[in-house]
Image (tube, rainbow, N blue to C red; front, side, top):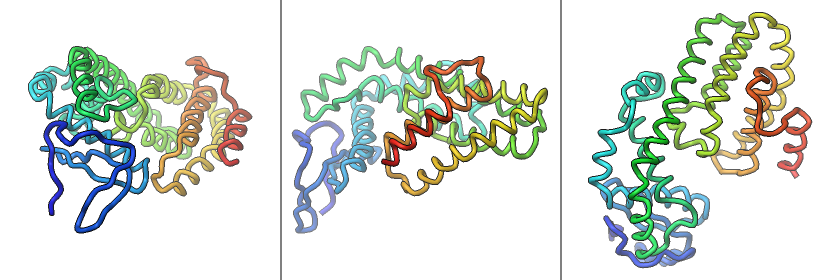
Length: 284
């Protein structure tokens, strides 16, 4: 029997654990709403982490289905989309950028924790978020615009600087990590607000290394082993989320600011010693 599809919250309460009858079997696990674009379906998962990621996307779809008209308006009124899309071109299309901005705005307007678990709490969330949606979307678009302008500037500087291979490879890899196609979805919102500083630090580093390439090379040699252990552990995780590893990843970004563009400041003191300590905690 095909799973039942829903376009509104008509499936009762979603408990933390539930049983579902499928192909003559009773499955017990963590329930999640699954985004099927035109509707959502309820599935159960063995792992709470996997369920949580899917569920968030499903909830977002259910919100979007309830707000068709406001979303149509929003799609046509994202400020500076054409300008942003030009900077986004190396990563993807204007439509993909628009969809990301709207997804993030929906998440911020409607999906604060704890997430709604029944019809009443979902409808209350819809009412509360609806009045804020346009304002939040403008805020997200503004931040995306600043990030993309700084990204374009860093890319241009890298291309024009004709830096040594080791340095340009390092920066190209850093930019790839910071700016995947779905960067607005993949980085936590609190972290996205630091992106302009991270990207400005790249440009500042390329300016400085011309005057003192030896200093840059020395710093890079110091940074490399600290970063390599993170990349190795990340590969070992095979996509499984680890909050402490994520925290370390952002500390690495702050260490780069501290090494190569100290004038841009870091929110808290950061050093090799601090990263070693964080690594020990992570590995214990």
